[in-house]
Length: 237
Image 1 (cartoon, one colour):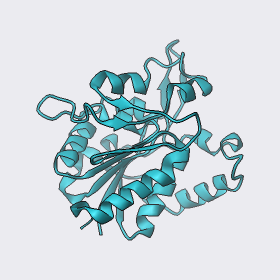
Image 2 (spheres, helix red, strand yellow):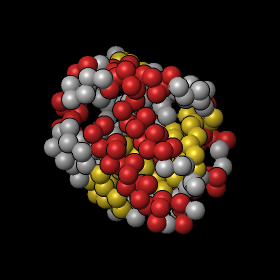
Image 3 (cartoon, helix red, strand yellow):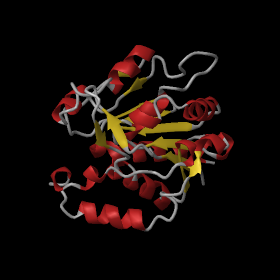
Image 4 (tube, helix red, strand yellow):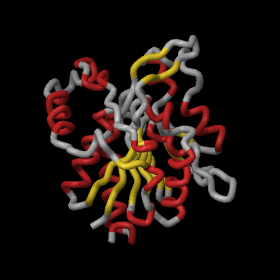
């Protein structure tokens, strides 16, 4: 069985254009379902954050308006988080050996645009694991962790098809005009080929060894796509 590394954001505040900040962190709906899917398939999971700071949950992810299709989900997410002894005291990404992992998974929430997008240690880890043939999964704002990766001075995902939280979804969240920059713009500027489903609809894109999901609704499909790849490639051995 494979070992999979999750990188969780430890950012507590999201800066806005007007100088104000709002609370942020990682989004439980994009962390717990994939983690449970990987563990149910028999794979091992480790958790890390930038510089080993405690991971930060965005409490907004448990608000009822995000769970109208499943009102019992917040309680299940809270229970699953409480049962994990390691998510609040994870390892530093800089100290990890990419050779120990077959796959890397980057959950979203707005936190990653704060502390993953410009983190050189995250960039080295992503580039090294990708270059060694590992799988990279990222969802929603998690693809911010792809931005600092470089191979021989070039972004290794240029020309790759992928997705992330869409501009329409950012507008619906009331943040499109308030954020200093938008993730789709930065990804496209580096050469990503983006596609989006309608807001809130599941959308998973697989291109070579990169797997991306658009939003929380895409978490289960993204995890399954990676599980299928792990089962049919050397990465799963």
